[in-house]
Image (cartoon, rainbow, N blue to C red; front, side, top):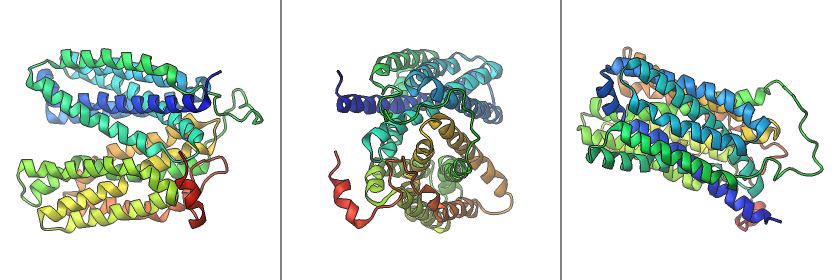
Length: 407
């Protein structure tokens, strides 16, 4: 008979592996974008349109993967999504023109969407087993996977490896990791209370209003992330006249603070509650965005982008966790709603800022994400815990000693 603690620990490690793999796969595609763009002979404008296929595929994959995870179990769908995403990452390296690249990106988006929602649904199950917040650490691992991809891609490009060779090797390695980590994932019913009723077969309940509210908040927060991803470096270059090398530090400051914040956000949530993480995190992000937007000095702007990333770091994991814990029999479907709308926000963020620059200076457009952060902070009360959730909405001082004593 297997040790439940050991199984839970192994399931958590495997989940870390899938989050890291997802970040690595997407990162390897990103670092090869310039080379693939040149190889296919497309313009920046065409590439922009093709990237929409990546986003559309991801949203579609989330809507497929979520309900499928509820029916078949995340233990089945996570490795399937990881294998699909791994295999699809090789396709852009083989593309010869805009049409084949578009098809490759659509396939990669679908694989990414299935893996994303399934691994988040699985993370909710692991969090339920630990009875304390662990979601943010998984998202930090995703970010670390992207960092590893940047380092790996830079090295292989310096060696003169072709995108087809590099991404093909990554695809084979990803499929191997997907298969090897699968047995360690938690079984679907591993944490179900024996006295709890089994989910009704074929149940198709309407999505609760609370899930849609969480999804709207995810859209707001991830729109802010999208703005920082695509416009922070341009802000320093175009508004503050920084050099290209210095301007790149803006995104670096944001991404580093985001990753670091996610590494500590679980402990903060365990101590003060998930509602506090969203409320004070979003408020901190609003402050950082304001500093970045108004600062006439490059160092202060870099600090502002770092504070913006630190504030946002724990917000999305809390929203995903709340969606997953709302109904243990509809984890995948609920997470897919929140993740899907959030992903649309991340895609929309950069697109919204562009037209606004025709009416005002670039730095002033950043008050749109600042305003959305303020709204998110004001609406943090939506994270009041469900009875089944192991993640506290708030913590009383009397509870802190027991929270600190958990392993």
